[in-house]
Length: 533
Image (cartoon, rainbow, N blue to C red; front, side, top):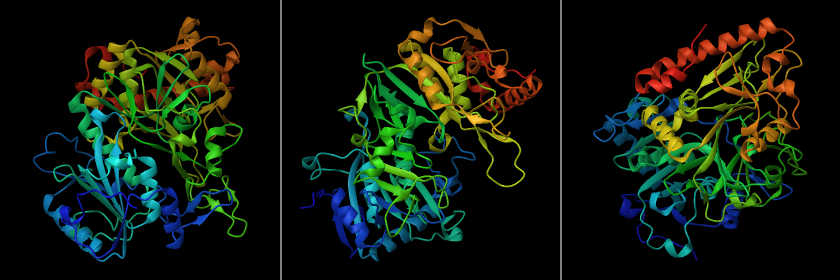
């Protein structure tokens, strides 16, 4: 029997003749997805789906309704783009009409947030069964007995087949993600990429929690054997999910958390990991999820006959993904939360090859690097690309932060100082040269894990440190079990002048980017800011 809330779709103003499937479990949703032709089963059990042209977020198609609620609270700009209430009203009318014409709808009542005092009730309405499975996996699932009285605070309607009209709806294309904080309604149309739903919930919590003194974070988190919590900030591709899935530590979550006075708590009940080039040797815990029923694999190449998957084939997407319940990872937190942090790690994948594999930060430097949110990528794969591209995403999650970055930065600094937290910058990128140079490889994951282990168990604090002349942070001179040369990025470069020039280029990029925050931070942070030569 389906557990169904007493608050129906009709109560929400939605009239539809569709057959409604409420709060289905994993197996029924997989069966429905297969029956609907939404995907196929892999040999070892996962559901494999394709998302079509959208294999990642459509950042330029996201809008927030600008009204009395948001006018002075949202940080308007390139990331948070306004939509008028009139345009949203037209979009809502057309969404509700589309809902009325569907044959089937899948509804899930879920929690965003694991700490009861700070969670939000979210209802998600889907036209695809696999989307419903995805969001049920990624958010926190209420106990069955709680569903009858479930009162949705926010509602997400996700219709991949809906085509928006830019003229009528005030958007950019047929794809639209429209957030209305006043009506507590999010409309997602024209994209099959399921991650839009989870990031919408992240955006809700990022908007609500700072007013309650809770720090929302785009991070992973785990707990050591002595009850020490570590938080890992990092943009996509920096190793956030990989490094937090450590068999020796208890996983709280891999992507989105809140930091309250009492705990670090996961916003989610599942994980969403990059699958491309996943290795059983380097990432055994995550690799094992690719052989489990209940995992959803997006844009992973599969042999239609043998149903064998190929995680190394990027022909469908470089951003191939897997979603799975958090308890698929061994040793996870029972209540999806843990103590307040002892260590904070900022992860960056430096394609310039000039940052050390680990550095210790002061609280002021930590706020500086948090607001900067630096990583660097190799700019695409087109012929002629010779330079990495610096990416600055403030708070390591700008697309999901509705309020001004200084709100989150000041909250973080306050909590670091209150808890006596040690902060580290860890480079999981390239060493010995730029990523675009022949023969230059990523930092070995074994080196990164060894350095992290030393940081987290406290032994690294007693090491000898030097001050980096370009970036001003402290870098260990020697760490047991790690080649000392790799600790000094300049020593790794054959061309020392080339290193100096590249480091100067990166420092200038930091300086130029931070200019936007200078007036919003205190003198301590300004004094920790980098200065160009």
